[in-house]
Every structure is written in C-alpha cells, then in structure tokens.
Image (cartoon, rainbow, N blue to C red; front, side, top):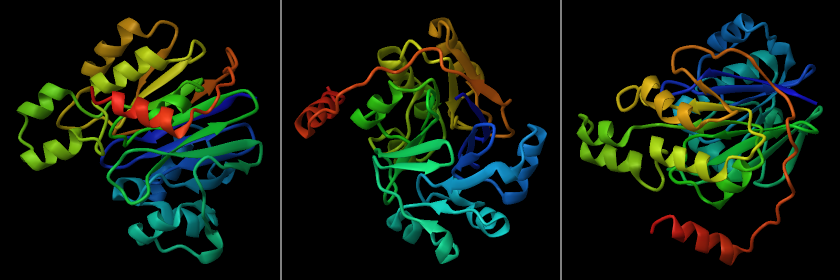
Length: 279
C-alpha cells in the first residue's frame, strides 16, 4: 500500500507533517494553528476527517502550538510521552492522551507508527517512522547528531523528512549570541547541511524515492544552498524543500524496493558507533 505525504510547515516557526493512505492519516507534530493546519490540508485536497491521531516528537512550541486545539475540535487522540506532556503543559482531555514507548509499533488503521529516541535538547525527544505494508516514511528533524537509531531507521525509508537546519559558515558568521550558536551546532541541537548530506550519502537506501529537506533556519540557511548541495548527488531520489511558510505539494510514495531486514545491534555496538561520530 502506498502513502501520501506532505509537509504543512517546517521550521522554527512551526512544524507539521501529514502521512496517510486512502482512508486514514496521522499528523506528526502540530506546530501551526489548528485553523492553518486545516486550511493548508484543504488546499492539498485533504480532509481533516482522515486524520486519526497526532504524534508529538517533543515539547518545543514550534511542535505543539496547535495540538490542543486540534485534539479538542476534532476529537483526536494525541500520542505523547508522559515527560513531554508534563514539559509542554498541554491542555488535553485525559481520554485523548495515549502514552507511547520507543520501538513499540502503534496501529492507526492500516498505518503503523513507530517512535525512536534521538539526541535533542528536550525532555524526552523522539522521531517517528510511518509505514504501510510496503512503504516506510521517516521524520528526521530536531536532531543533534545522527545516532544509531537515526541511521537504522533512515536506511529503511522510501521517503524521509531530513533536517538541514543550518549552513555552518552562515551560523558562524551570523549575529546569533555565541551560546545560541553553540546550542544549535551541539550534540543536542540541530543537523547542519553537511551532517545531513553525510547521512544521505552514507546511508540512503537504493529505494529512497523522495527526500524532503526540512526545518531550514530563516537566518542561517537558504533553500538554494541546500538544493545546490543535494541535487547533484541525489540520483533517482527527488529532492523537495519543505518550506517554513507554506505547505509542499502532496506526494505519492510508492514501493520501489523493499527494505532488507537488518539485525538490531547490541548496546555495545551502538555505543561504539555513536562514539565514532566524534572522531
């Protein structure tokens, strides 16, 4: 079964990603207003009635701004960890709160959503893959460094939203305070263009058909920079810029090759690979 995906907004001003099939869909984060979410979906020919749940990555305002309103108005369950719920101070009805755990699959109709932990400066940050029987779509944003969890899930994706937050030179030479610069480029901050490019070059599966370059900084990056960086080496993978101001087109993700089964590495192997990233 194929999947339909779109970014409704991607950036520090709000993040919201739509993934669904013909019958049901989920939103990953709800960082723009409820009204704007529905408006942008309508422009894509999508009905909010298809959305069956919202999954929350972490408590930063650009990921949760519209979650409470969406849940209240459309009676949507919100999948969120207890620590994220506590840190985000979300006003949700108790019967709409569903706690999730990393690596456990959650069924939403014919969709399967799986969370995995990551490095980011939040209380309990996670990212997600959304799968049909044959297609995997991953959301890889708000990540300090590409740890083993990120790499392992990225290798399985037919399409991915991949953070390309900042150009290293623009960040270094820009007007941000030094502490903020250090936070952004630290191990619990955001992925640079170069880090994202290295992840793509080293771990892109042969069947990845679409790559959405996401969460671009307004002040430390430009769509042209990332487009020029990725397009020459993209091969058969279509490169799309996820805007911080409007929705992307709706893309139809089909199975062009099944991901091979990969064994889960031991904790010692994971630690060794993560440490090697610092060398």
